[in-house]
Each structure stands twice: as structure tokens, then as C-alpha cells.
Length: 315
Image 1 (cartoon, rainbow, N blue to C red):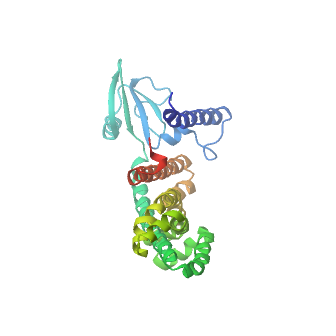
Image 2: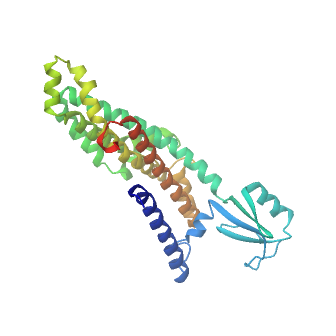
Image 3: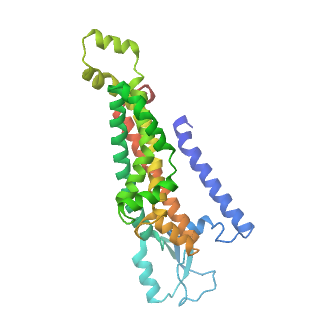
């Protein structure tokens, strides 16, 4: 197996092994669902595999049977019209399996989780955009005026050291609990420092020989900035963006823990946990993780497209 395939399959196999171990330990030790739900119960909130035409093992009658939050469900024949209609409306795909049929249907909480995730994702991306613009602007300013570097750097460090738990209520009070801009402001503060410090490092760590060559051609400071410093800073900027992508989702969700509209993902998680529906809360957390991974992969793809000349991406 090639090295590139190993990098893909190794984490997948480890994840599958951890999920199997998790399911086995929770079942073997009879751990209560409010302490640690089974992975099957968590995934049942997002999607379900339904075998129709089998013999249900739950002991429920056809009139009382429902899909619940189980990941794998066996439904007997002769179901009530109501259950048949609900199954038909929730079905994604169906294929025959001998005398039975297997359907993949939407989980009971998939729709509200996706709606809440989309709302929080917009907050994270908005804050990420503002934080990136602010970080790059400050890095450019401190590169152009060296004296401003010593003046602005302590404030940037102070912003990075500020705990988000103490900062979130202040932003909610300033902009309003239900205003998405309050969460965007939290994300902006969180990602400002990694963007600024990485961009600044790339702008000032220019090869002295390249700088002397540009000056020997009588290049102006603007030409040096756009033709030498900014291209040199792009790899460092993308490194900061990879860190900021994860911090953006963290900042938006944690900010929502202190209040927000009901459609927000952080509010959904806290409400589900307060009602002891921990399986759906874990399902929302998994979706948030998947969103963070997706943001990272998008940034990685953008880096490959923007930096084909970089030694890291050369064949």
C-alpha cells in the first residue's frame, strides 16, 4: 500500500476500531445512557438502517412500533399506515434484500441538527472572515511601520490570552444574545492572534539575499511587499488559517452556550443535555466535529491551489 493510501486508511481504521470498542464496553459494563451513550444510539439520531419485512426483536407490536433512535431497526410486516407513511417520508434509499427490503432513512434529529449546524457555521465563517482581515491588516501595518510592531503586539497577546468564557457574556451584552454578530465577534477575537502572528512571521522572515536582489533593482517598498513579502507569507498565512478553522467552530459554539437563538447549535446541545437526551447532544457534537474537519480540508485544498510552487506540494 502506498504512503498516501496509508495516510487515508490508517485514521479510518483507528476510528472504526474505537467505535467498536466504545460500543462493546458500554454494552458489556451496562453504562447508563446519560453517562455515555452507545455510538449506535448517537448515529441513530442522524441516520438509520431499517430492515422491513423481518421479525422485530423488541417485542413491540406493529401498532406500537416506532423507529426510535436506534441505528439498526428491524420492522415486521403488516405495519400500520401511519408507520408506513413516516417511513416513506423519511426514506433516503431502498434496495431489496431477499424477501425483505433495506432502507436508509433520516434520523429523528437530523433535520434540527443540520439547521442548527448551518446557523452556527454562518457565525463561524463570518467571524473567521473578520478575524482574518483584521489579522492580515495588522500584520501588514506592523511590517510597514516597524515601530508599530512593539506597540500592537502586546495588545494582540492580551486578546489571545483572554478566556472566551469570560469574554462571551460581554459580547452578548454588547450586541444582543440573539444577534449572530455577538458570536462572530467572539470568533474574531479568538482567531485574530494566530492569523496575525503567522502572517507577520511570513512577512518579516524574508531571505536577506532575495531582499538585497530586489533593492539592487531599485524596487520600491510596495513592489517588495507584493512581489516578495506577501508570496513568502502565504504558507504561514495558510498555517494560521488551519488553526483558525478549528477555533472558529469552538468560539461560535461556546459563545452560544451563554445564550442565543433556539436554532443555534450550542443552544441545541445545552438544551438536549438539560433534558437528558445525551445521544442527540453527542450527535450534534459529532456534526460540529465533521464541520470543523470540512473547513480544514477546504483550507488545505485552497492552499494546494494557491501554492503549487511550494516545495511541500511538488511531486
